[in-house]
Amino acid sequence: MTTMRDALHQAMGLDSEVTLQRLRENGLAVVDQDTMSRAIHDVFCGITADHSHPNEKDREQARQLIASIQGQGA
Image 1 (cartoon, rainbow, N blue to C red):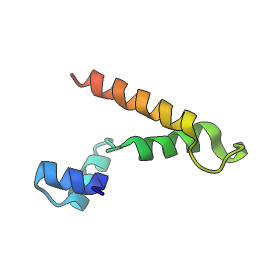
Image 2: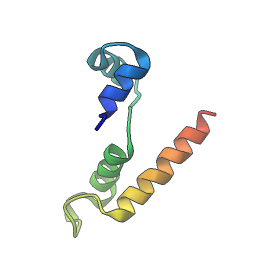
Image 3: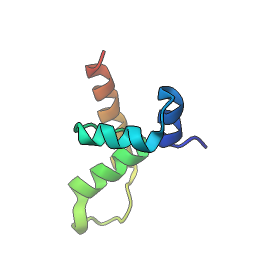
Image 4: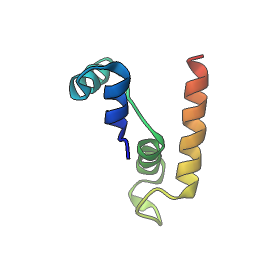
């Protein structure tokens, strides 16, 4: 399974740790459906959630957010 870091490294031909750090320093984030789902769960469900991990609603919201963000860059 290719990780997000592996994909970034392959796509940019650079050291992935250095590249990710530079992106973070400039206010950018590299996300995939899993990391976006966890972020949605952490922010919107929080500690009062009735589930401890992202559920299907969180994953669907992640898919929709990623699609929207990708469309904004077009």
